[in-house]
Image 1 (tube, rainbow, N blue to C red):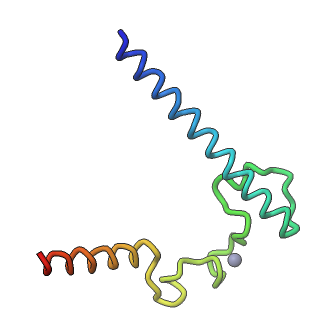
Image 2: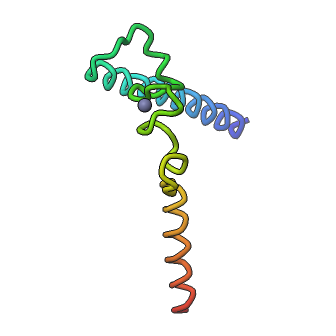
Length: 93
Ligand SMILES: [Zn+2]
């Protein structure tokens, strides 16, 4: 019984945290949009689309960097860096 209560509390906390985080992200995007002088009648639009993204998939600034310049994404760079470090550590061991 006590375990069920703890699981319930944990799920409740996770849900409230998720909702709070979403609201925080939307508020941050709305603030950015306001600073940039954009219309913020519907701040919840920023839940899916970021405030400073123009929405045009051919826009050089907003598109995927790989599509624009062939540059690797941040996740790919991170992954390669981590692989390199672990490889070097394996050589030392
Ligand atoms: Zn753009």
